[in-house]
Image (cartoon, rainbow, N blue to C red; front, side, top):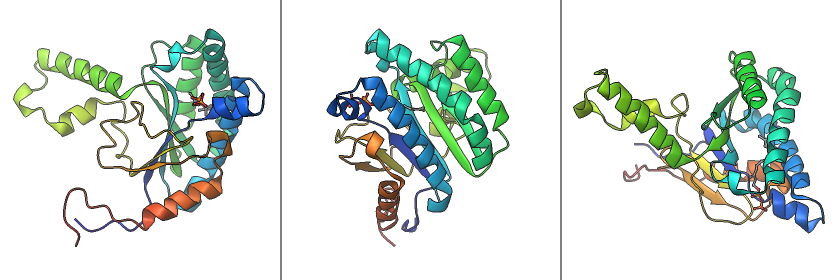
Length: 238
Ligand code: FPP
C-alpha cells in the first residue's frame, strides 16, 4: 500500500466543550450548544475548499440522555430548529445530509425533519454531512448484529460466509467510507463510543480548543497536518 500524503476524504468530529465554554462565560450550557451549532455551519461550509468530501459529527450520544431533562429537551429543540433553518443552506452549498444512530427514541417531529432533509438533499454531491443522533458505536454494532442474525434465521445469508464486509453492510454507516481523521475538541483524549468499528485505522487529533471556538482556520491546520503524515494501514513504508 502506498503512503498517504493527501488530505483526508472523511473527517469525523467529536464536538466537545460546549458546556464548559458557556459556563466560562457565566451562561447556561444551552448557550454553548447554540454557539456550537453555528460552528457546524462554518466547518461544513469549509469542507469543499479543504478537499474534505465526507464530514461526520457527533451531535447526541446514546449516553447523553443521562443529562438533565432541561438540557436534553433544549438540545432536541436545537436540533429541530437547526435542521429546519439549515435546509435551504444545505441546498445552496450542495450538502447531502444523512443521520446515523437509533431514531426510535427521538420525538416524532424531529424524525420527520430528519426524513425531510435526507430526502430533500439526496441528490447533492459536493459534501456529505452525516449527523450522529442518539448514536453509540456499540449500540450500532449490536443493532447491526441483530438485523444480520434475522437474515441468517431467514436463510438469506450463510453464517459461515459472514466476515467484516458482511457486518459492515448492516451498520448505520453502510453508505460511508471509513474516517481518515477523527478530531475531538476540548482536551479529552477519548473516543466515547463514536464510530468505533469504522475508525480502526483512522488518525486521531485531540485538541484543547472548545468546540464553539473551533474555527475553519484551526480545521484547516489539522487537515494540513494530516496530509503531512504517512498512513501505512499496518504495512511497511514504500
Ligand atoms: C458536547 O459538549 C456537545 C454535545 C453533547 C452536543 C453537540 C451539539 C452541538 C455542537 C450542537 C449543534 C449540533 C447540531 C448538529 C446542530 P458538552 O456539553 O459535553 O461540553 P462539556 O464537556 O464542556 O460539558
